[in-house]
Amino acid sequence: MGARRAAIVTPHFTDHDAVCNDVFHSALALRRRGWEAAIFAMGGDSTREAARPIAELGSFLRAPDDLLYFHFSHGQKALTDAVAAARCRKVLKTHNVTPPEFFSMWSDELAEASRLGREDMARVARMGWERVIGASGYNLAEFAPYLPADTPRVVIPPFHETDAMLEHARPGTPASPARLLTVGRIAQNKGHPFLLRVVRYLVHELRTPVVLDVVGKPDHRLLAYLRTLELMVREFGLEAHVSFRGGMDVAGLARCYAEASVFLMASEHEGFCVPLAEAMAFGLPIVALGTSAIPETVGDAGIVWKERDARRFAVAIQRLLQNPAERTWLADQGRKRFAAHFDNRILEQRLAEAIG
Image 1: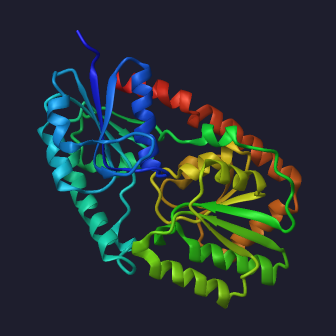
Image 2: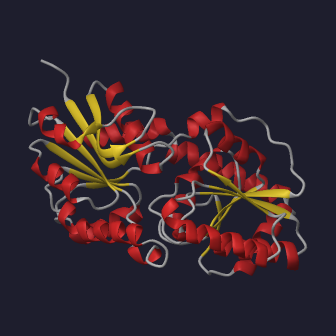
């Protein structure tokens, strides 16, 4: 008798994407535990592993005790139809589905994909899941109203590539001026305009020289948003204080974390926010806006503001830059939190317990 089969299903499989990293490492984790695991997607361009086409899903899942592990992150009817048709064990992983209003001003395509994803939540939630896994309690709470009351559910944060980054880590040297870091794709919900206002306060009012490194892949569908950020930089007189670094490989991102003094996150909608966990692993103190899942992820490893007050945010950063002892304390809290909750080995064990 052959090994049990597990199909890990995602809408699109690519590299340097938080959901796809979770998919890829879920497959590796299941293989280590004896499953014959394959990734299925509607499309993708990953160099790590070729995803199989969704059309082959039915022939791959041959037995009732095979597993379909569906990572839901946005709506795609052909994909959800294939998932619904499968006759085997089914486990759902819910990721963030950004509300369409965050994109409606900038991209009709992204707004429509988000709208379809939000509409599909109710249908997906009622597909008879053996268990539903949330990337965070916040994600799980968004799905809870649609789930049958007796559906078992658990929170398991997403797998990530932090281990590979730490292998490239080199001791950072204090930069002058101090470097601040934010990581995430260049999209409207990530709160870049707010961070530019924060840097303006730091540089021009608080007389605290800094450089903000903005690391993230530009999206061709959001070029107008990127142009707006570039205009804001010029209007605020921040040309020497903001650096758009684009997407980076593992070694480049590790270097950015090592060189930074404080990690910033001003995203308006996150289902978990993997860069926060990366910052903890690198011992970076965090200053973040307390939206969506961010307070849950940060815990006691950073300073979280509920108020969208750029000046208060800037003052908190200035205080950290002037207080090495507080930075060290937050760095230690972050490393402890990462080790206790977000280490990939812990996540693998929790996934094994959830799937059985």
